Amino acid sequence: MEMSYVLDTLFALFAMTLIIFMVPGFAMLEAGLVRTKNVTTVLTTNIMIYAVASMSFLLVGYTLAFGAWENESMSIYAVFLFQMAFVGKTVNIMSGGVSERTRIVPLAFFTVIMAALIYPLVVNVTWGANLLSGTLFDISAMHDLAGCTVIHSTGAWALLAAILIIGPRKGRYGKDGRIRVIPASNIPLIVLGALLLWIGWFGFNGGSVGSIASKDKADLVALTIMNTNTGGLAGAIIVGIIMYVQYKRFDITMILNGALGGLVSVTAGADVFDMYAPIYVGAIGGAIVVYGVTMFDKLKLDDPVGALSVHLLNGIWGTIAVALFADVAMWDQVKGVLVVGVFAFSASFTVMYIINKVSPFRAANDEQQQGLDIEECGLEAYPEFRRSI
Image (cartoon, rainbow, N blue to C red; front, side, top):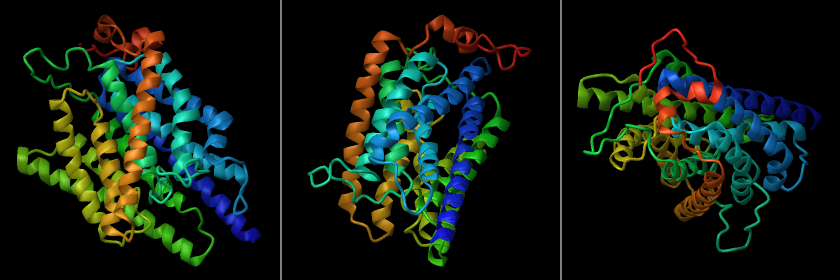
């Protein structure tokens, strides 16, 4: 018993460390995708999200989600740290999608509410104490290993609410309906960020198995990590094929987003899929990213990092895919998607609407023109470069 306690504690701490690598992953990915005049603001936002969200979860969120600080299979402190590693990702998903026009202070206010109340309530009714137990809206039967719906969709529903409130970047959509292409500023940073996220996903999904202290559990952890990797591979490959067939070019930013879409799509069921199902699930996830980005642009929902396609559409697809490729009831999956979606969107929209009245999220047009780094941080990431407008 003592040895399994030690092994599982070490496993949770190692998985938590891998997940924390996703903090610089999001930071580098977003810093590479935005213009140089907004890079410092994006980096500062990511660090503040990690700090503010983690502290809010420590003080309020964990207890709301799980009810009590107790665990017999491993150290409760390791359990907390593992769960804490997840919480900031919900806001990271949102912050990247509203970058280049959003101020830091109101986003920090929203981070507190998301980490202390909104996300913990979603965890409560899925993985935690379950205040909806026995009611019509009980969704605890949904199989969501590491958060296709609980984390990715929750963050992306918040992003959708934020985009509707904040609006697009200045000049993104012309009056004649034309879409202005705003190219990424640093491709190497995008590659680094995406690969850090990919590596972090092994702790994200593998650690969610919860134990590695027996032969069966060790095999399940290994299968889960292999399936996670396979989903990312399939997503990248299918997007590379689509890009070349359609444009005779390989778009590395889209290929990497395809990989991330594949990783999201296997997050709910990596522990119950056989070794081949993630090929289909991840490939469909990658394709969803390609056509999702185009769809959201046509709807004039400005998302610089493609988070709606990667996290919302694939969060939904990945949750439903569990019922298609494993012995899980479809209604349980669909019901979970619907309940979490309605709550996460409505709660996020309400909170952001109120915050926006007190401290507006959107930076002024002249601040966007100049770049948020000067106004928000007083420090440019690339002061020797000529900043494009």
